[in-house]
Length: 423
Image 1 (spheres, one colour):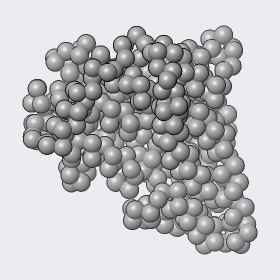
Image 2 (cartoon, rainbow, N blue to C red; image 1 turned 180 degrees about the vertical axis):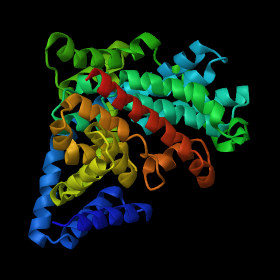
Image 3 (cartoon, rainbow, N blue to C red; image 1 turned 90 degrees about the vertical axis):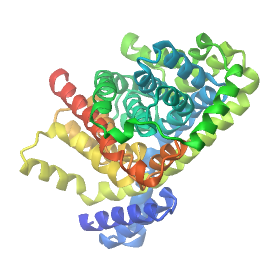
């Protein structure tokens, strides 16, 4: 089929998402129109779309399993306990670093980046009021830290990138640890110095104040820190068995087992059902999104867009190593989603990246990092969820995009450099 048809379908999907049509339906519609415009018959188009969905089914199953860990951390209050401990432990002098580090660690242990921001926001806003720090800068600390954690986490974007490349999940996470640390330093040291002065000054935000008050009232019911850490520590240890001892524990097993052990450590087995329901609820939207993403990934795979992009990179004399991060960036811009961007990019370009001599784990790591560059655009839910929890207007939230993109660029650049020197 013609590449133009796929591009038209992708553009249509973006347009429909901007017009508030649910992203899954938008991408299914874009895939259908893209296939037809590209020259496929109706039956062929549907067949290609279904083949695309088949490719993401294993990742969807693992993502649903990840909901157990995520639900446990949120419902039990463990996520809030970890947040409070880090920010208070670092003190007021390093408060911004604490906010970024907290969000990074929450994402790193498997909490969705938007959920991590929502979790940390009440504490961050309270700290900001005490220190007279502006909400835009506080949000940048949370988003920047979240992006750093997102590339080393057992979150859907990492799971599906590793799945599509046929890479080990724990290695895919491990390879981005150094880029994530460098990215965190960039967030903490550089971002506060380059943002406009108006971003640094505190302003009255009634909605944020109410949220912080609710968090303070609920703090007395939170579990202790040692038991709150049990779930993420067990999960990480199980995932680390393969690279360390060559014992393979699939994320399908490691993620829910870690969550259940965490409940046992906190003495909260009575909330198991609530935690599982919350986790399933949070992951269902992602799973449905991936179904839509799979349809358009199938169309893109069938049209030769990957060949066109590779030819463009050749003409610009770019090394083949850049295919993975650039693909992640372009697809995250199209879908305004790290998960969808990593899905389409890894499904469409994995063969070319591996053929260029890049190992599957490094290819998945770079694609995942590239998908953080433009995943925050306004036609995605992350943009609105993070702005809403802090009470920012659309215009003020829009002004943060260049700085978010800088963080993503640093992560992608560091991941690519790490691959170049160490792979």
